[in-house]
Image 1 (tube, rainbow, N blue to C red):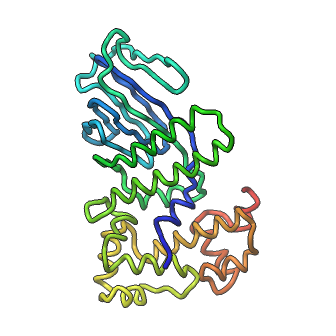
Image 2: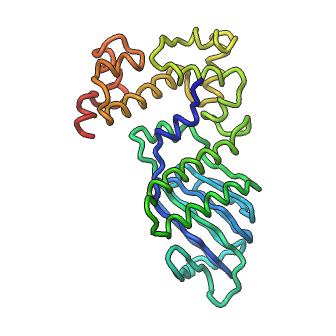
Image 3: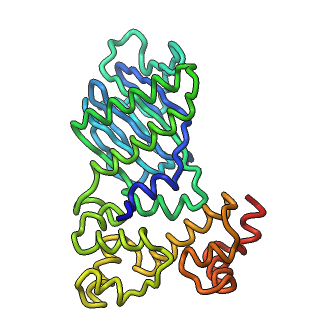
Length: 297
């Protein structure tokens, strides 16, 4: 059987960006805006606030891990932040190591913070299937992975980028595994935790070129068409055939980028009876023809 989570992480293509060890003391605050990139943080010791735009503050404590697949603006601060308007105090004490707050204050928070990027051409669709915020407590494996990423980032060892890419993939999978279940926000993880929907999602990923209809998927889930449609949309966040089309187009983009097959062959692989039918569907979904998309890439 296909593994939808592994496939989506593979196509997302996480690539390294920034990894920092942050030590803070006293009253401090860091603010970042207009990032639009994945963010993660592991708290080694102490407690602090993380405030993501549009959400209530989260108290992070030692042993906590948080990941936001797409963050645009956020603040991290001491539990008692400095008065508004206070200039931030930030000092890089060594490569990749930062001191926040009054240098004379004792360090009471240590955190490992990182940013990465997703190189996928269909990044927006894939990210929409992931939880908005992943907050995990007491998963030491995640902290250890973040520590390995930081060490690899500041080091100058051979094959560093390859190692970082693999570590980021494992970190993302581990974080998503930890965040799975019925309490996750609508998306792939919540769908995979549903015993009726999980086989359907695996079938879609295993055979995207097969003949797929809502009726067939409902039978696969042993549900009526209307009940299945409502449940899939509620748990996964999109309608069944919208998911199928989006996944087919994500695969088509990857094949076009790799130039591993002709347009007609790609059409057949992802379930279109002809190249012309695929051209119409691709243009409607992406806004340009497959040939033009491949040429731009």
